[in-house]
Length: 127
Ligand SMILES: [Zn+2]
Image 1 (cartoon, rainbow, N blue to C red):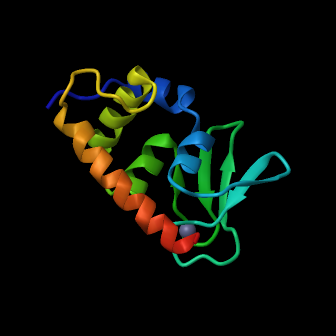
Image 2 (image 1 turned 90 degrees about the vertical axis):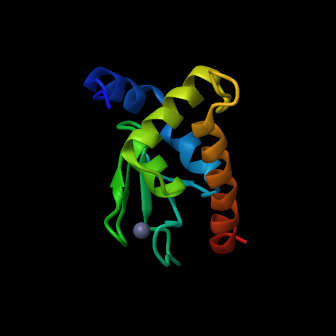
């Protein structure tokens, strides 16, 4: 497997809107100062512990300590590997709405399946 160039990772981390990504995972975010907060989907959260900082395009959970970039979010939210998350984000970025660059791309199909599971999962926390 070829290594993913650091420049690619930096570009994804900088160019993909984390706020949009978190919202598309079904998490409602509300503004608190320069940050946005929401219910963390990764632990049993009742008081919004998830903090998203749009300025840095980073997230962090005060409750369970999870956090990171758009890549970390995709890995956790979709339950996929680092490499898979990078692929998904790259293709999502290229297609605008997670449309595969190459039709019938197995990764994207798989991600869509994961993603619909996530909506069910997050729906449980945010009825
Ligand atoms: Zn958490």
